[in-house]
Image (cartoon, rainbow, N blue to C red; front, side):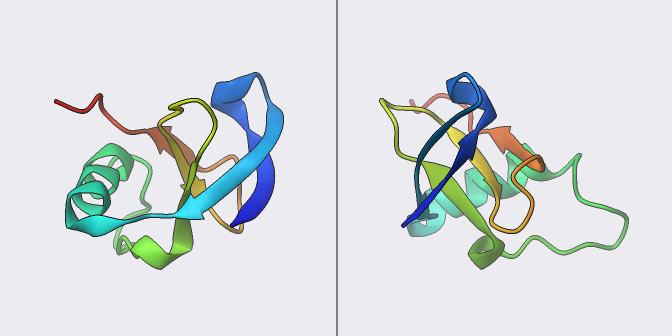
Length: 74
């Protein structure tokens, strides 16, 4: 777990956890597709997810501004 800034939660500090499970990692890959630089490969270990009140924010561990929101769960 890490305690970092979350733009989706009013730009406040919250705990983030590693991405879990194949479905969550696949959803993160899709959500981040437009943000990846040409030729950049999605690496799940480089991202984590906000744990605050159902927030769906995922972002890079080393650059909190680089991230996206996971789509709603079915």
